[in-house]
Structure formats: C-alpha cells, structure tokens
Image (cartoon, rainbow, N blue to C red):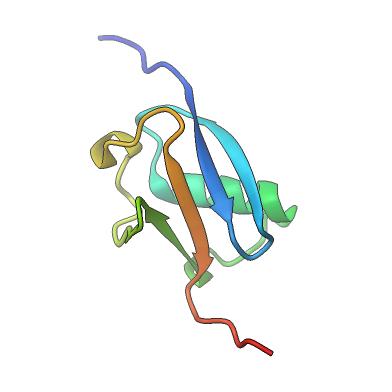
Length: 90
C-alpha cells in the first residue's frame, strides 16, 4: 500500500475575500477542507458549516463527504467557499 503524498490546494473564501493554500492529501474530505479554510481565513473556528457551500470548477459540491480523489482534485485545485444564502447588496 502506498502512502498518500501531501499537496496543496487553493481555496477562495468569499465572505472575507481571502485565498488560502491548504496542505491536503487525496483522502481529505471536502467538509474538512471547508472547515479548515473557513477557520484559517476568518480566524473563527466556531462558524456554522451548513451556512456555507463549496464549489469546485464552478459546480456546487452537494456531497461534502466526498474525498478530493473522488472529485479528481489534484495539486493547486481551485475551490470556492460561499455563503449558502445570498447576501443583500446595499
């Protein structure tokens, strides 16, 4: 059995307009990516995860229990985290 080599992905967290690079492995779940990216970008590890969605290559990821390998996400893969509800514009 071969060990999974770590690589880095890019995650844009739109509520704070910050991009973070996360070291991950191919077995990392999308929900873990979301949790880690939100905590790093906002500095708040207590955010409610259901209040945010994740997109990969423009498509909404409905099943966040999927691994990055199942999505085909490799090194430097771009993810976007958005609020689940539309924000009012003033």
